[in-house]
Image (tube, rainbow, N blue to C red):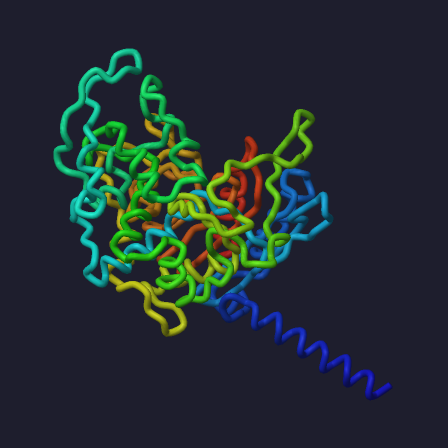
Length: 427
C-alpha cells in the first residue's frame, strides 16, 4: 500500500511537471502581481457562460500580467459532433488576428536594413506603380483616374492608408471578387498581379481603409527575403519565440486539434458553419495570406503578446528592436484619415470605438471615446471567427480569448474579456 501511494505521488508530480512545462509563461498567483483571484474567477464564470448558455460550443482564454501566467483555461467542445473537448492547445483560425503577427515578422526586415518604411512599394513589386487612383465615379462606374501622388510606400501598407480595400469597397462595375483575389489556388505573386489590374480607392496616405494591405506586405517579404512567407515567418518569429502551433496549417498529425466553426441556425441553436477559407488549414498549401491565413493557439498568442510588451524580446531572444515595437504601437492616423472600421464607410466595431492604427495593429487613443475599459496605447484587434486579444503596456497585461463562431453577438466575447480582466485588477 505504501509503495502504491508513493507511485501515485510520483505520477502526480510527473503529471504536474508536464502541465507546467506546457505553460506558455511562468505561473504566478493573481495577488502577487496586483490582481485578485475572485476577479479572475468572475472572468472564468463569464467565459464559461458562453458555453453554458448555448452561445458558443467552446472557448479558450488566457491572462498574463507582468510576464506571469495567471489563467489559462479551456471550456466546452472544439468539435461537438465528434465529442472532442476544448483544450488549452486547441488550434483556431485567426483570420484578421493574423495581421499583427505577420506585421511584426516583416518588421524584422526593417530592423536589418533590408526594407525601409518609406520605400516605394514599386521598388519590390513593380506592378504597383501601374495602379492609378480613382478620381471620379458615376453610378459605381469609374469615369476618371489619376496617377498615384505620392507613390504608395511600405509605411502606407503598414498604416492601412495605401488606397487598397477589400472587394466590397471597390465600385461594383469593376467586378472585383474577394475570393478571386484571395483564392487558395493563388500564390502571393498572383494576388499582386490581380490587384494591380484595379485602380486604388484613394491616394496613398489619404485615408484608412480595411483591406489587402497585409497580404501585399507578405508579397514584399517574400521578394526581399527570397523565401516563401510560411518559411519566412517560421524562421523570423515562430521558432525564435516558441510559437510552435502557429502557421498556415495545423502541425502534421494534429488535424483534430482544429476547432470547428459554429453559428446559430434558424432556431438559434448552434450548428456547423462554413467559414471562408483563408488558408488550407489542415494541410500545407501555396497561398499564404498575411492578412488572415494563420492558425494558432491561445498559448502561442500569449507568448507573442508578451514579446511585444517586452519591447521585442522573449526568454532572452530578441526578434525586434524596442524602437520598432514602440513605433508599431503608436497611432499613425490623423483626423482626416478616417476611423478604424471593417470597411470603407463602415462605423467602427463597438469594442474598437476610439482606436487608431499603428503598424498593422489597432492602438487605443487616449482622448477618444471608448466602449471598453483599457489603457492609453493598448494594442488590439480580432478575427472573423470570434478570436480577440489585447496587449496593455500600462498594466503590462496580455489577454487572449478564442472560439470559432460566426454570428450576431461576436462582440460579446471582447466585452467579457475586457471587463473581466480589468475587473480583476486589485484596487
